[in-house]
Image (cartoon, rainbow, N blue to C red; front, side):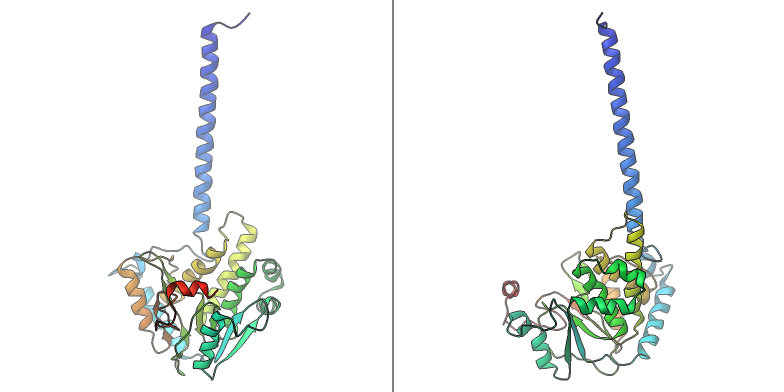
Length: 311
């Protein structure tokens, strides 16, 4: 005998209530997982990033920590040897096509303007060999299978730490002499890509060997790869492992707290002014690439659109 209408209605209500309960529980579970992943992805290697207001606002709770960190950095940098006059670059081969427009207008022109400098180009095998020298066998086994772009990000930090010199991406334009002296121990540039984008440039950097800024950044990079291997919920994408982590590591050494990129408002000016105050040991510039950078000032020879066509 078919169920009565009232029984059918009860069955539908029960089924519908059960379905709603499953949807609600599923949504709550997804939200909880999202919160956990978000919190884990905010972790640096040894500490959480902090609210920059705690470091930079007037009478900030950690303003004293910031000043102490800057003074310690100044003292440490002053005792380092000078920056070696070596340009480090990485490419799929150990030689560059000097006729390529990017090489002619970039590192080739840099070397012509700075004749005391030499260039060392490391191919993929040489990058791996350097990393193998700088990390433990276990860490190297995790790194060796990474994408070449990620390996390059790790390698450039290790190169600045262990060898020193100047690293630049090969798409950097150059028409300026590099104004370093025996007192210059680091070039740390600030990237400004509009109203929101603000971080320390990772595509061009220079340092004396054993600089704690770059040695810390390299160690943090390697440690996070180890963490990524143990915890799949961590954000280990290239941009997170590169520019974002670099910003956090550098600010932790210089300012006493790991801050996230895309800093806004007056704090941007404070960060830049405090970098300028580390002169003569640190050279810095707010860059608006590709035509307004530390290495290139717009002389009308290359239009913004033409820069892309050089590739």
